[in-house]
View 1 (cartoon, rainbow, N blue to C red):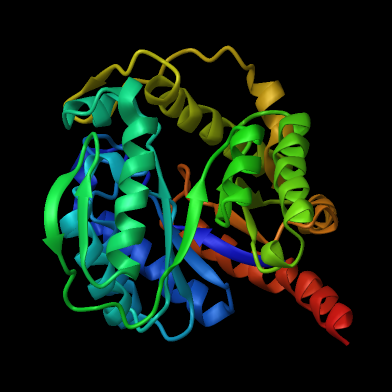
View 2: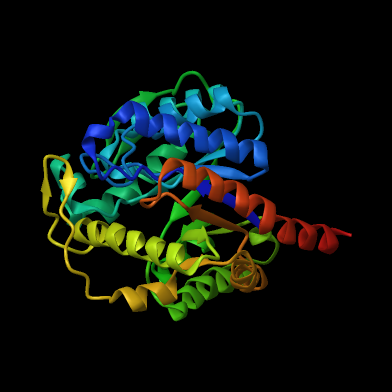
Amino acid sequence: MDFSLQLSAYYPDKSYGGDCLYADMLEQAVLADRLGYGAVSLTEHHFINILLMPAPLQFAVKIAAHTDHVKIMTSIVVLPIHDMRTFAGEVVVADIFTEGRLMLGVGRGAFAYEIERLGVPMSETQERFDESLEVLQALLTEEEVSWDGKYYKFDPMTIMPRPVRQPNLMMAVMNPEGIYQCTKRGFHIQTTPLAGNHQLLMDQVDGFNCAKSEMGDKGRNLTLSLSRLAFVSDNAADRWKKVEQAHDYYSRFDNVYTGPGIVEGGMIKPLPRAQSIEELDKSLLICTSQQMIDELSVYSDLGIHRVILNMNFGAEQSETLDNIQRFAEEVMPHFTTQTQKKEI
């Protein structure tokens, strides 16, 4: 099982400044590269102070210039708010500038607050996403493309420069049935139970495994990535502080994900959550390194190929960096050893 570090832009204080915010994220990426993480991931969001990254491909190129090995994954790019005729070229250039380390995760988007302010009704995002994905794939794989669809109509054109290689396309989807259908179409999958229960996770994994099994050899190389909020802590007081930070984080996340989308000056208002902090605690990976190994071993046994770790949900930068290192030293070697044993 591989591990990716989610470069989560948590921005509760605007006065901190975007320059400091992204410098912190770059520092995390450089450390992850040095410590042997398989990838770092970037989430596209606009107009809000959590997961804030309006230019993921640009940041991917910046990260590539400061690292040597780590793959750079978008988790995700929101296709319905982009024009595929220009976005396809941006993907090609980003792939060239990252020297093939780009992993392109795409999705329909989750926050109506930002998507509808960009002129796309949330009710149309699935339909727009489906057509956008078809257009993108055609532009990246065919020499000359014309289109006559509902959202795209254009005469023959060729994306230049031509792709040096085809980027790995990863689909972000949470619904178990959606995971099944997207896997059957040949896509790598990114998913998360968010703060949901273990049964949702099991259903998501089952959807992937069922489709992959039915595909036989055609699905052999498809992978499932699971995103989780995580932090290694063996101090009871510190552990609970991290749980409280996570609860505060989700009180903002829920506002724009399932709630009314109350945002003032770019700052998401924290709202009361239906899920208690004690219930949230049970669903988080905030624990000792041994407990983390035990929890992640379940994921490994289920066949999950990559865990995307969000360690930046309110802790100070120094704490986040220490945790990135601690996870690499105390947790990752267990799974590296297990992988090597299986290969032998």
